[in-house]
Image 1 (spheres, rainbow, N blue to C red):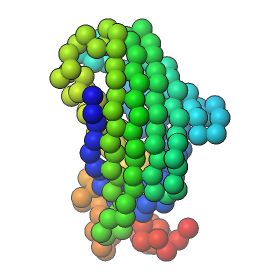
Image 2: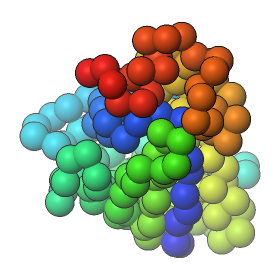
Image 3: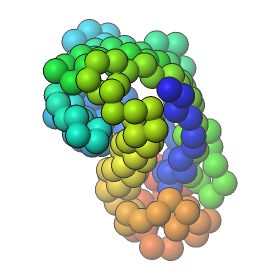
Image 4: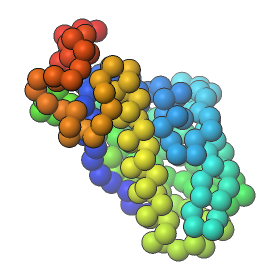
Length: 179
């Protein structure tokens, strides 16, 4: 299965990059994410509870980040298994500066699933994967906005040249004037 898309964050690229490299933030952003802990340099162990149609269960797996170009891109490799089956995949995340001080995340990758979870049908798996991805990106966006003290909302509403709804310090951070 192929997953690809874009997401617009109302935050500077460095803030988005920092969140994407923080295992606690990522674990909290993943729907069903129970934990994510670092086991080595750019290596993590993750636990997720996933439901696809009538099949639900816990997956434990490994995540490896490679080809890291801070604060721009990395390749993520995932390998997990549990009672519902297994999943394996890899995908590239790339950050680009957007107009108005925001950041565009582009992602593209391939995932293979097997076992009981694969028996629910390709369309249900694809729609669930897209939903989990969307929910995860929205949760990540809210976490980044909270870190920057910018009110959470849709990315399109958050990105504006004046950043009028943010505090003065958050406005300067979002414009890259503060570290």
